[in-house]
Image 1 (spheres, rainbow, N blue to C red):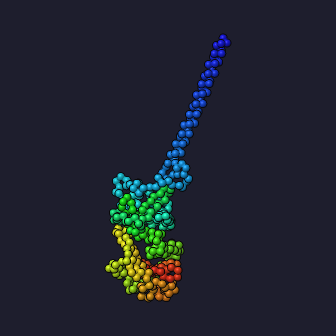
Image 2 (image 1 turned 45 degrees about the horizontal axis):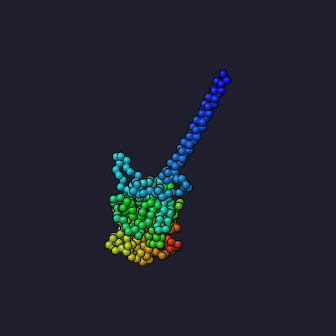
Image 3 (image 1 turned 90 degrees about the vertical axis):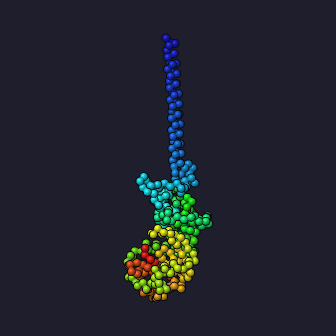
Length: 338
């Protein structure tokens, strides 16, 4: 009887030991599986496009996150026709852009936030058929680098020599505003760079001006330069040989045009003729080099006055402008309304 009880006791103890071992092994395995799952989740989150991977600090971007221009993602939906505009073939949306840099050699300069619209507007309206051209020599090539909201990088080559974006072996002319912006950033001492600086300064002054009153108009004869208004100068310059010229895409008319520089300080821009030489003047004697006080004596008329720019209205539009650098007129400009 005692032997049977001892045997049953041994059996019960053995069963309890086996159950304990099974429980311990199961617990260890569950912990290992949980650790594997956690590691997998961490690795997956670290490999997401645009997110910092393991070992990277927030905000760092590894080289593989840089987007290739040839990986276009903005494809048309079923039933939609393919867009002709360059921006629609890039692998990012306009609203994704956080900042933009221009890189040339070892120099990297950020485009001011208030001028991002210049680049985006040009990309938005660059027609890939009407604005197409051959890539230029690499000597003038720079990189326009877009920093996106998810910290990814997008590089688009741009050539300063022919004012063209480059993509997938082709080139597309940018507009005149990109041409001025790039010269202002990379060649600030050039004729285009200097004009861009004053033009942008005046634009910012106009945005901050509270007074929006319109000045009284003046006769066109008062703003004629050397006896000629804008349309006369346009015809005259069409028959003259330029010292140099730069192409740009005019999306308003869907054609490639040129900025041209002529002798005696004449620069023909998009709907602007800029005079920087002292040999040109109005019938009243207004010319480059005069002070603001001298201008007021020679042209007794109302103007919309900013610190850097005075604009005179003729008819329904402002057609005559004086740009001031310091206390003197640096540029005299005839403009044609769009």
